[in-house]
Length: 135
Image (cartoon, rainbow, N blue to C red; front, side, top):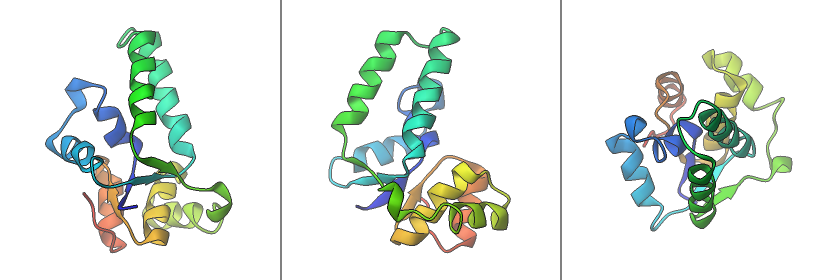
């Protein structure tokens, strides 16, 4: 494992208008490194896909191809039992005025001593304040 991956970076791989140099560097990094995600990542990604399909931003086939791509990448879902939601993500969210979802990514990076790949401005700020490197 080399870094924690969040949904903002993940979805930038699908939507060209959201792609950044940073998101491309992170994708390239998966050629040699592994990403770790909290279990909520699967629900967040799925929700973005379904919403994009409903809004006709992508087709169902594009959504399926994207999930196939994600399944082929070295992305490991953290075991829910190793995460301490009430003592971790919630505390981090309160401390940095983040959503509990974003708190879960930061808490995971802090617990594992890993860098965090995010495009979210508030999450980047909170990570840096917490001593977590941001990719």
